[in-house]
Length: 319
Length: 248
Image (cartoon, rainbow over the protein chains, first blue to last red):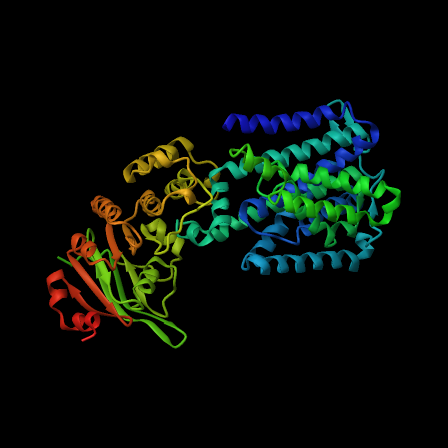
């Protein structure tokens, strides 16, 4: 089973790699976007699915990556790689800091406290609009120098580069989360999700493990935010609003909470659903009705999400 | 020659929940290698007392000493690493995980040195330890099953297996025979005797036959205090104990 699990994950990455050669331009860009957002959902799922902590403030970690990268590129002239690393560092620092404060709570309190801090982050991006550009945001188009890979010059605005950078970021998050949840430390995280008191009485400092989970979750979310900025050349406060904290929750629930593949499936499905629904003329502006209706159906028939249901019925060994 | 300090000792240990004095100034000694039973009527403070030893509850005042060292301020999870292991009164296993995973979580703790070493411990060594422990308690055949699907008696054995995998110095068993059939009780008593070869055991138990079978010394608690301590004969003859149990 061990090898099969790894093969399945590699096949998924392989399929995404091959997809770029058959997709028409519109869907090509769409899948690139989905992969970056799915990386965000993968990060979210480490905390919700494998540690049992529901956050409603993950937009601040996505945002930490986004703003650190964007501001470094916009004001300091950082190249893509340096800006990406700054974004990653910022999201790790923020998530550890937030963890030290918010992990004193659990359950509904954790949900509310994380949401409050994310709102502080959101309002700060509006308040300091001279620097951040507020809700207008900052456009980075033309400001990012190409990435030099030996003899290759890669410009992120080029669709093929965009697609493959998105794929690398997604694959990195995807495989990191797989490795983490299957490691002995991941086993402890799952134990905390199932019964924290028992885990503590097995000798584990559960606070430290939850902090590790939050840092990992924040780092993956931040990487996604950072990549989003680089690939779509934009930083804006709409990406740190409450909606962007709710999205990864929905994507994860839809795809299957506590499954490594679920976040990708959920993100892809929801993104296409929104796209198709908003394209139908009769319901143009009320596409959220279609989204809501789909969610109701899924929750009635697939309460553990799509991949979660598949696992429950046919593939119990899936991580 | 200076007297060796007992393996476990409490001095003036006290716990109040609001106005309720659950445990009042208890002085207690447990020697290495003992199987000690704590008995007493419901609400005597037995579970609260052992919870202060395991660290799940902080005492209002008093100290807990382990091998002469003050551990009163040490958190519960670090006491487990010292060798003080508690099994829950109400069966507490990871119902959604397999039997193997349950024991692996305990065995893994012995192999973990710090948080990040949990990312890279040797899975083969771990699997060997889990298999050995499961064989000791007779649950090897169920290793792949979900823990929640085990019959009640086997869940209790799994709980003991988890404690065993932690390689305890002191094993605290809180009413381990509760809800078990006579056959299962006999099996568990035999298992506890085997464990006692390598560990000191502190047992809260209501079943008199189990207590007499296992322990040479008994501590009796009532209303938060120790009212008697001694051999089974001494305890039986103690007028205070008779008053508590027979309501005389």
